Image (tube, rainbow, N blue to C red; front, side, top):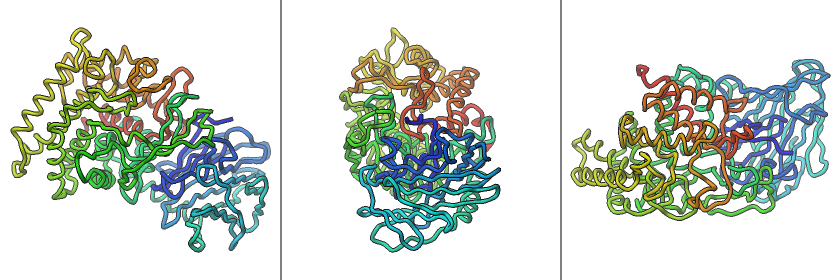
Length: 595
């Protein structure tokens, strides 16, 4: 039986991440990168698709308790048994060359027998490796991949049922460490890692990083956990931040809304940059800005909505028929076909990010303004075309209002940049006229005067939660009656037990997909922001309190939430949800604080 999505915690080394269940099983791990094929795929299949469980002998259910060490990504999982108590500490230290997964078993009380069951299955659970012994390791090899398992000499390991097993006892104060290392199969043995030194260094490094957090308002621990999660989803070599560590966790249990989120979306750029800058993480913000600049370089007409970890452009989508999907939610998809969509909003997000970076004083680059001018030249005619919109709908292109608002943002930021930096060259008068034209068209064609609300697309009666961003981006002031009306309409028509749907999925043909979905968590954070901006701060704080309460026991959020079942849905942990949490906390409790 599958665990629930909220039963997982994440550990990682800023190049990949593993999901660890309450039962002590690592059920998802892609090596060596976030977007590599998984060697543990139980998350999307069953035990035969790969996992690694360490737990007391005979313990079939969840642990007694678990928690991250404060300010770190080091996870402690504890079991109380009739014989005593035992703790498993899981971490992935920042790597030198090869990625390591370290699991340290420690006796807390009494004398406990512990079992380890390791099933390695490469290529998303489809390839059983050849196992052999070498230099005190058990080595699994298949094609380009090898995984080396090392433990204490006194701990016997043996093969059975196509897995590697061990059984041992620990008394109070005794420790047994396992180190699992991925390595290219054609290279010699990886270096030996001291697990205790790696634990000490990892705790120290994470706590030093966490100490840089400037936020000191309510729910500081939850905000910090969200920032740590964003750091964990960062691909350190390039500065790119993946949307989530997983693929195909369903937006509806048993449904087909299952997508691969192990890539970097431009839509997240402004909100991510703002959260990092305000919280005091300038180095990470600059790394993300620099990733953005590399990714979008080239012909503005070829700007994509998402890229690979290093800015790769080709992310072909295909299905894995041998995996049954989380809770039977098939298909399991690898890659993302939405990469080929046209989304005009990304131009606004890029321009807004670069404007924000300039204001924050991030290191300037001489080519940035030339790139921005090229984007503006492209938008001069392209803005009139329909697109697929923010939510990557697969029901055909439309004139989405949010996309047009973000075009306005792009032009507005170009105008303001020139007004503040008169030495820059550009078509200031032409851009001002274009800004006015876009604004006028949106207000004429994207607004329903009878209902006093902006709509999802021109001429459509549907609403869209992205319209909550209108006051945030400055398209209209928060006290404009059209803004207040839009917030109220979305609150009424897209309500899902007090939370917010993206749009009326399953009741409209806009996304071209069957089935329903849960409440999209970042949209509920946007509602809290909009309520705050429109003078309803107490209501905003009440909503924020509820949203914070939806984090799982270790402070993590997925993409969506189902109020009916009380379960998280969608890929996990989700950067967009954690960005929303950080930004809303900053807006409600911190924006009025001195720098």
